Amino acid sequence: MAVYIYSITGKQHPLRIGDLRGVGESPAALRTVTAGPLSAVVSDASEDLRPKRRDITAHQEVQERLMADGTVLPMRFGLMAADDEAVRLALEQYGEEYVQRLQALEGCAEYHLKVSQEEDALLHQILQESSVARELNDEIRGGTAGPDAPLRLGELVAQEVQARQEVLAEEVVGTLRPFAREIEASQPTGSDFVSASFLVTEGQEEAFLSTETSVADQWGDDFDFRLHGPLPPYSFV
Image 1 (cartoon, one colour):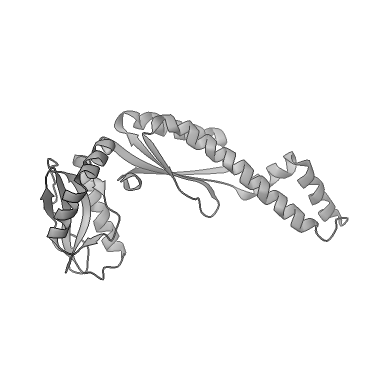
Image 2 (image 1 turned 135 degrees about the vertical axis):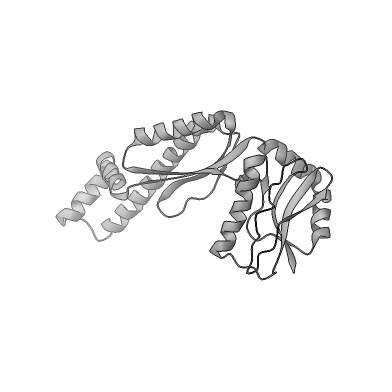
């Protein structure tokens, strides 16, 4: 049996975890391992634990409970140690770094934003504003284009899409940047052109949310803004 690690907190954290159960087929009770000024919330779990929905939910419930009472360093799902002593040694070895991150995250929550644009609206905009793309498209539709015209048009549109979305992404993140202590951007997937996490303090939360809503309203229905939070600050541990 291994030890599953949920979070690291300061030793002074209330740690109201007595009624929570851990991950795994036979969930064990949660407990803490303490070293110096830090505590780790752990439970026994099988070494072959897999990310089933009930386990991910249990993991998240622990983070939310701890976050409601104070600052927490949430570990990502699946972090294991051999035993309590290994956890204690890690707290001792990296204690200074953990304390610094707890201080940096104090009073903060993570918000994750994804933004996409409706494809047909974007293509229509490109054909309206790019004379080269518009002429190629007209030639293709009129049957007067050369055999390589569809490829040329596709490459041109792809370049336009990338350039425009890079500008839009910088605008979104830049507008929200003043209200975030830290920002972590990740590579967007699918039709998204923004995928960014914002570390927001309690004092800036209202301004951050109202600004995000204002930008989404101004940009209109062609854009899909999906903001998730407040979340445990996984991206900033």
